[in-house]
Image: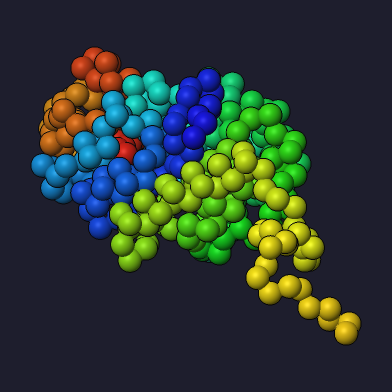
Amino acid sequence: MDALVVAGKTYSSRLLVGTGKYKDFAQTRAAVEASGAEIVTVAIRRTNIGQNPGEPSLLEALPPSRFAILPNTAGCYSAQDAVRTLRLARELLDGHSLVKLEVLGDPHTLYPNVVETLDAARTLVKEGFEVMVYTSDDPIIAKQLEEIGCVAVMPLASLIGSGMGILNPWNLQIIIANAKVPVLVDAGVGTASDAAIAMELGCDGVLMNTAIASAKDPVLMASAMKKAVEAGREAYLAGRMAKKLYSASPSSPTGGVIVPAQNKAA
Amino acid sequence: MLSLTVNGERRRFDSPLTAAELIASLQLAGKRVALERNGEIVPRGQFDQQHLLDGDRIEIVIAVGGG
């Protein structure tokens, strides 16, 4: 498959995965391996002081030497909180600048607050962050985020954790057609066909978490998603046939049939 | 005596301490953490020199699973 390029860096996988909602770090690692993802998202949270000091950490299971760790701002509802979280993330990851910005609007739908997102993106770009930004599927906002200097625009397919699939392929197509930076579907993918459809539309990649972590067999679903993203990308590059209601052109030869064609009019 | 708010919890210490000493006292030495003092990042390389003052608000964060 052709490579994904984000902020000048090349990645062989177009599937990006989250690391939340797994049973344990062993399952997280197994699912990430099966997905083939190179970019994996993590959240930034307060340490549980005094609890299980010997406990292994996520970054021991997914070492930054092996994976591109993409810290997110999940749980932030203001530009200020998102910026503060990513400054901490940059320090935590030794100056690493590639981040996922998401500023949420409310805790029920987790729909993005695009006003706060635009505000945070401006500050982060100015501070030298390479911002991959989660947003709504509004083509105007997507363009504005690109113009601010975000390195990738990541519209939702449907709400975070909903598994509802791609609800507005038309908006995604407009965003893709207008973008000069990679467009990745982030959120809403439920199963492999959703990921394939996103890629067939021309998305540069797909970011998902719940679709894998909440499957009955997450490791098997991770493998399915890897194939779906590859299949969708190849189908997009191959260029699909035109749709038509019916075809007067059968796939098999019209001549040489052992029973000659009947004259239906007779 | 000094009192710090660490990750939202008030904690008392008998003698002045540095960020590095706070991290050690919380059994976090050697862990990959980032620390914020009164809203400002303290770089890891400065934990040894960063003295903490009475009333400081400290946040100590790690990476956890998330989408």
